[in-house]
Amino acid sequence: MVASRLLNRHLACMTSLVKTWKAAQARLKDAGIDSPAIDARLLLEAAADVTRLDILNNPYRELTPEQVERFDSWIERRLKREPVASILGRKAFWKIMLNVTPDVLTPRPDTETVVEVALAAFPESMDFQMLDMGVGSGAILLSVLAERPAAKGLGTDISEEAIAVARDNAAGLGLADRAAFLRTGWADGLADASFDLVTSNPPYIRSEEIATLDPEVREHDPHLALDGGMDGLDAYRLLVPETLRVLRPLGVFVVETGWDQAEQVKALFAGAGFENLRIVQDLGARDRVVTGTRPA
Image (cartoon, rainbow, N blue to C red; front, side, top):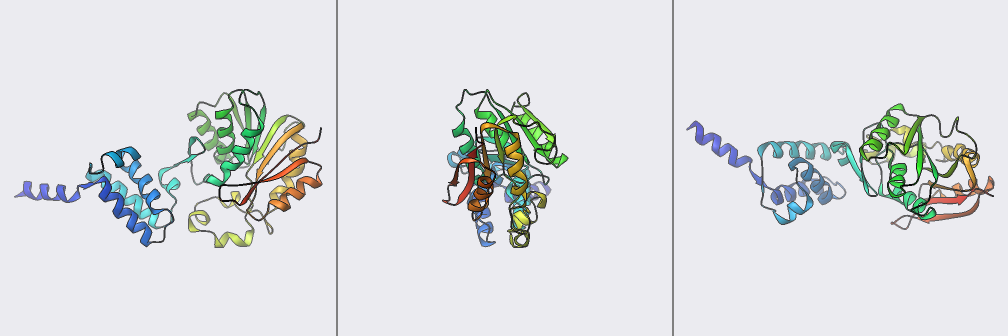
């Protein structure tokens, strides 16, 4: 009798990959979660230690009770609007995988536009020095270095915790020998005319808009990495003169902006004398990046 009850309990806990995935999708969709299918799949892959191909090729594979319990707990957290990256502690960006913590901004696909523009400016074999101000998880810096084997880079951040995350990510990606990190404000203490490329994804959300952001951002991303002041441009007013100071002649800068701020940010760089200024749109056809060069 006892053995029968245990067997029935075990069978009740068993469920297939596809059944589990579809049930979680429905729950997330009913709760108004964006991208319920993707979120459910990512959590299922991690909880059951499977790949996307496993789910497609072996959809009726049974999960263990432990896997079901882990997956259900993660779905409950997602229903409370905790981001998938926060639940798993990692986030795919560009062509790399990054560890993330509550101390760093979760990398967004929009920011990949910065990487794309930076890579286009420097051939694969070119030896150059890069500075990423406000390095966070290291997303921009490490994505560029991973594709430019002759380049070296420095990431700065005011947060010691963020520096630790970026340093761990560099080590995990085998880039520790070409990536250095410094706790400082933007480019404070760095030598003049010492970099060929300067990048940044600074805080640019207007202070009054923080409260209106999705819970995934408002409650889980550090406000230090979000709040750009009353008009969202406070960080750029500091970045522009620092970028001019540390860039070498003809050096390139690439910065991310809010979708409605690019023209204003471009004007700040133009006022400082930068040349070849242009605005680049992201995959959603929104103004996302301002880039240009320091005069010769």
